[in-house]
Length: 99
Image 1 (cartoon, helix red, strand yellow):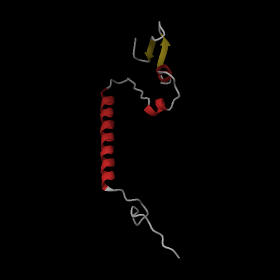
Image 2 (cartoon, one colour):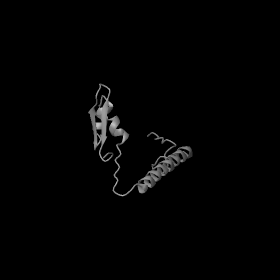
Image 3 (cartoon, one colour):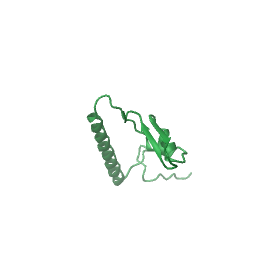
Image 4 (cartoon, rainbow, N blue to C red):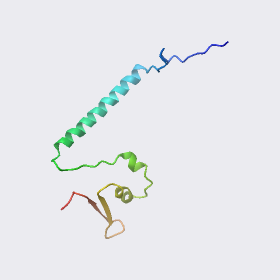
C-alpha cells in the first residue's frame, strides 16, 4: 500500500487555494473592467434618443482572414467601402453618418 501525496495548493474540499497576490490582482482587474463598463454606459446614456451604436469586437476582426482594411471594414454592418479615383483612394460610407 502506498501513500498519495496531494499538492499543498489544494484545500480540504478539493478546491485550489489562490494566493493573496493573485486574488488582489484579479480584484483590481475586475474593478478596472467595471469602471470601463460604467464609463461606456454613461456615454451611451448621453447619446440622443434614436441614435444607434454598433461595436465590432476585436476578436471578430482578428479572427477573420482578411488581406486589407477594406475587407475588414466591409464585414461590419452598415459600412460600405468603394474604390476611389486612384489605386489608394477609397470612399467610406457608414450608415447614418451623412446626409
